[in-house]
Length: 324
Length: 282
Image 1 (cartoon, rainbow over the protein chains, first blue to last red):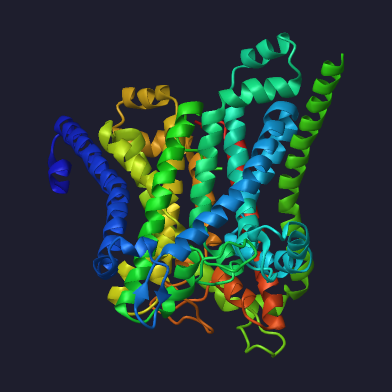
Image 2 (cartoon, rainbow over the protein chains, first blue to last red; image 1 turned 180 degrees about the horizontal axis):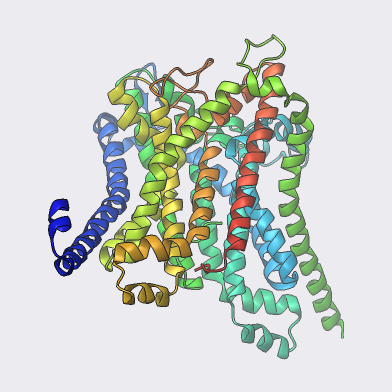
């Protein structure tokens, strides 16, 4: 090909070059397609591998895996319920804290704060989302856990101890502490996305409410927030998906207890935490396979939530996924 | 009158509450940074960056192997992740039709939402199991999977932000599509692409969970990429849950170093973006 180009007369050389470039376009097209397709293939492969490696566990326990509360590596009996319970409970606690806090801050940043100040605050909140999870865990172990053990948990037991939710010894580690850490990890998402959703509410909506004599709060709470509700709910779903899959910080403060406890002060376990703790030391195929199946359960949970969140966010802001 | 007064009080109270929410959420970042600086800065010294870890109880020692190990693992992730993210995005933005890019975009979002610990399991099944040992390769592969969706979506977004008139001008001058992409479109979007890549690296640099059972850990220097390798986030985790005071101090110091690096990368990406004029944020 090279020699053909060199020996050809000028005109045909140009034509050859043109052909080469057209072919070049096809090569570029093909190569870039391969790379793009690899993203698809690797994701499919991921699901396939999880499915295959959880095979022995799925065959042995069936759907009973999801409802059994036994976790006994010695007897090779595994059930996911304590971990599903811990995961759902800690995530729920996290949202209980982070939704009011996050939506409140988003309202302030979108409706009240001057744009410049609002942008700076949002940037700082987004930086918070970038703090590695292990660093939050480190802080939690050495600052939050002692505070919980010495003041907050005794206080809760003293004032609300008649409820089954606040009983038992104050260890400092447990569902509640994990929930607080998860709240810190999730509110940046809620703030950043809810703020976007609030910012795209048309000006006329606010003006109409104010013209009818509503106070600033009434117009915000009764008109603007309902208008942006899909985006806000979407941000909550996204935060929930993050909370469910969060590993390191939770592993460091959850307390590693395979029981199911009503008390929020009690140590527990989450799906991600048991995988992180036991995977590299798991002996026996059934043990490993059960851990992989837990991973599969976690994957399925977060996938459903993420998809729902994406749809809701697209429905309100008319944009694709937004990474804070 | 009474009713109006009540409504005004509610107004003021609730607006104040939202302000407090903002103060609380924003101050968390400063609390984190402050705690790390207070507890960690004394242990950040020359030894910290240059020495290997000593056994607990001995004073001194550093985390040099973990710093280098983190660098190596992240580098492997970049070598895999950046080409895939970059070239894949060129396909999505410049070549794709409708259905195929939509499918790929959807799976990229899916991959982005996969919990990091599950990514770790996947890397373990496809690399650690066949190779029969933990390695830097496995860790880098796991991290690349977390980086690809971020780089892909960001690059695509900025490529799409390049005005069509630029494409048409280049094609009208007789340039091929490949030449147009290389000489016109990518340069026009370079700030945005760079931002996306920096954000991707910043995210994976602090990841611990995918490394726990892929690159594992190593007390010493890893002699090759086929050996277990120490990494800064894993080291922080191991030190934090250990019972030794010395190790706790080093964990604080390592946390401070890691956080500062991650924050710098995030701020740098924002700075690069703010300097960009040709590429709009889409």
